[in-house]
Amino acid sequence: MAYRIGIDVGGTNTDAVIIDEKLNVLSKAKHPTTEDVTTGIFNVIEKVVSDKNVDTNKIEYAMLGTTHCTNAIVERKNLNKVLVIRLGKPATSAVKPLTGWPEDLKSVIGNHQYIVHGGHEFDGRKISELKDDEIREVAREVKGKVSSVAITSVFSPVNGEFEQRAKEILQDELGENINFSLSHEIGSIGLVERENATVLNASVVDVAKKATKAFENALKKFNINAKQYFGQNDGTLMAIEYAIKYPILTIACGPTNSIRGACFLTDQKEGLVVDVGGTTTDIGILNKGFPRQSTISVEIGGVRTNFRMPDLLSLGLGGGTIIQGDAAEFSIGPASVGYQITNKSQVFGGDTLTTTDIAVAGGIANVGDSNNLNDLDSELVSSVYQKMTSMIEVSIDKMKTESTELPVILVGGGSILFPDKLAGASKVYKPNHYEVANAIGAAISQVSGEVERIYNLSDMSREEAVEQAKQKAISEAIKAGAAEETVEIVDVEDVPLAYLPGNATRIKAKAAGDLLIE
Figure 1 (cartoon, rainbow, N blue to C red):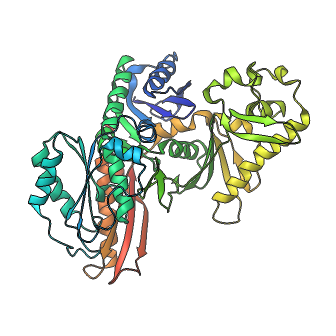
Figure 2: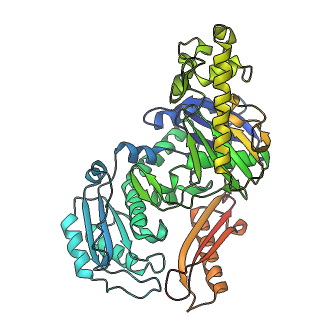
Figure 3: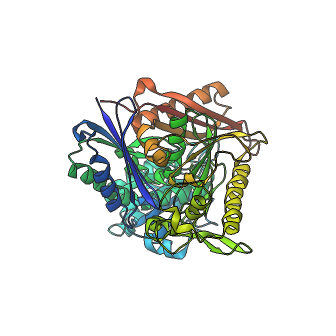
């Protein structure tokens, strides 16, 4: 009888649920997110385990969707000093590593960038030979100055041999305690963006280690001896060891947890998920039960990257969004009272007009004391509410790829703001436990693995290339913590690359399976 605890850290609240072996919710809780994140996690665990129905000795699995790494990059805090080494000389010397990075971020991670010989063409031919002595010389220059290494080789998703060899040389010179991030394991095709993603990954390894240790200590404080998992930004989980190696994959896992939670609570595999928090609303697409991924480069902390990210539309509209002006001329946000809503919002006795006040005054929501809103101008309430609803409807329309109506699932504590009918929605769902869908998504998620590579079909058939990609994805899922017998391929994408000489194709495969129960 194994219970699971799922925790998700949002910008306003940190949510937690405990579910039993049949995936029934036994207990749920919310607590304001704290500046250091860890304290908020501790507080919500304390709250959720206080329920008399919960026997903490039965909790064997703990899942966390956290903003530790996102916050560290955005705030430029607690980042590793990183050796950035590119294998591609002389072909890539015109564009230096970290080109376009914010200067303050470059300074924080140490400004140790080198371009050395190496790299491959798209078909696996070498650009130049890797020079061991050149790499050893770099290592001696930075020894004692860096704690993490990011290695990027030209077209390493085709052939990662040089990155592996460079790691061995650097490890020999710098020691076993250095963290390594290899670009062919992290990013997609596109040298600069893949290099950027790899450097960001290398910069937050220590943050991830501290977060996992803090999570473990918080659980032990409440006598919870559970195997730990972190949420990935594709709506699946990864084991702690995998999370420490690839911490960048935790970025944006909050919205994807909500999407997976929405899928579980409604049994809908296709549709739109509108996750309304205290400060923002995130809208994503549910595709075959998983979040749709973005097909464009994404900026993180001012850095352009191309590793996988969910396709999301965010707008500054949440339960605590501040309303200013009168019926003739008003503004909605983007400023928010956030977690202070129960003190500052008028419906709770405060003096700030928020979207929650508007929804209560309009009879849509029932929280706080509506008598506090008796003096509100009814015309203002009507005008603002129409605008709020229109903002959501327009955003839903932007996310759709076709004109037909789709199911819309409203989740998050702020979803009480919106009606049961929305333009563009074939049906609006607001399931039970909607306010903690993110934590439920973390608790029930599967474990996944993904691979994206360019294959030269001069050397093998298309079928052989696809099968090779599938097997690699399955292997990655098992490494991340999936039970081998449950792993199956959930998505395959095969795109011929007409702009490359020869018969080249890009194949992307994703596998997912159930949590390994030991």
